[in-house]
Length: 457
Image 1 (cartoon, rainbow, N blue to C red):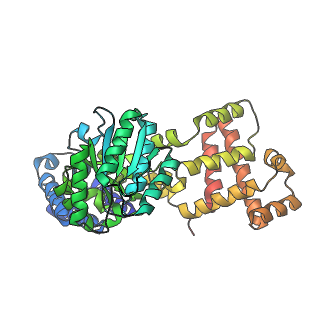
Image 2: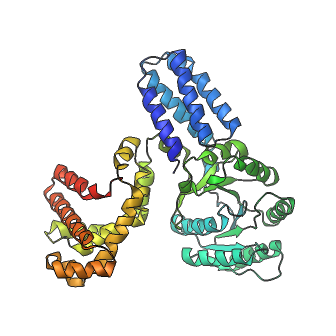
Image 3: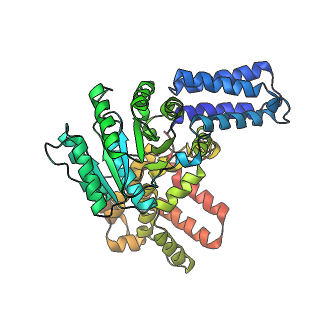
């Protein structure tokens, strides 16, 4: 996520922190690098001009000139301006999802076709149910594309969100009103309205969404925008902002765009905060957007808070505690436990999802591991363990040559892969033993050797 701009800004931060005094020359060089970083990230040109001008004004002011550590002060200025650019100076209440109304609270989702509205409805419904403990109903008013209605029904089933069927031949406004009436009678807290989209902005679409807004009086009107839209997002955001009283933005597919220009431009263009960011295809891949944490991630400072939240939501803490207690009693760490640790990593979004939230120094060290290679290897490991008998998973020492050949054939891998898996299991077993003994240094060395086979080629 945002790899390109993060790499650029991390280098700029490192360079700036090394400056013991500021001159006009090194300040201009820094500003040039900032400008290039933003332009390469596909940030809108007016946003780049404003951002660089604000940093230049502060960099040449007394705040930096009178500082004992001007390089670090400049880092602080860039961080502060990134936070402001992404809506950090807007009231905190405006940056959060507002549900303070007589139920049901209606949330209208607007955006172009392909922006990810339907998937976002499912993700948001799941988030509301899990984080806010709300009962949610979703409805599609895209009467022009039956496939879109079917897609929303599928997404709702996966997200465990109630779906309101779209009556054939009904008008979008009537469908939405019927859904709200149903929600009111069945004590549902939130109604998510998935509107029709087009591949480009057109007047009939805008008129229809405006009518829906006038009829429903939604508490939230969220503009959904694809992070990979680039400069075109500026015109789209302006068009929607001109016709609808938007309350916030959802940036989708942020994990698929190394540039991130939309995330840095859309608040400046619309004047509305980014409330959520889509960070993965899975239905749990939606994060409440925090400008300060995102600025830290862009500058290579990582987002440990998000990592902790992801661990809390994805990891089976009960299973982890059970394993810890077993290890404390001297119980053996077997291949069933090893498989569970692999599954826990995958639930967190895999190795790439973890590395993305680490500070630059740690993520660069972890960057020696190729996430794609590691993910592929993890799937193969799971396949090999699945090919074992229960007795083999409990007692790995039973696995000799003939059993190895059978496991390899069952998993569709060479026998050497089975040998490597067993070696990695033994290393992880050593890690667990060291944890019991409190040998942290030995544990880290064991972990390093275990992941050595996943390095970049």
